[in-house]
Length: 72
Image (cartoon, rainbow, N blue to C red):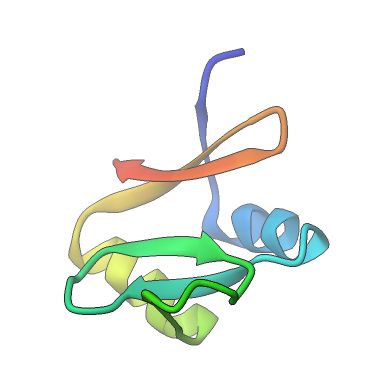
């Protein structure tokens, strides 16, 4: 299946159902979904996550329930 760009609101719903949270990779401006168990990823708010997406011109893509942050 191909990755399809989805709305942030839809990505958030899918992530929350899977127990994923928004994260910022420490020491970088990279963002990702996390279960919160990675010492290299700092949990951030959904609002900050969305701001990072917009600022860096990124979007969330989905395929078969798998979420990935990529260039829009």
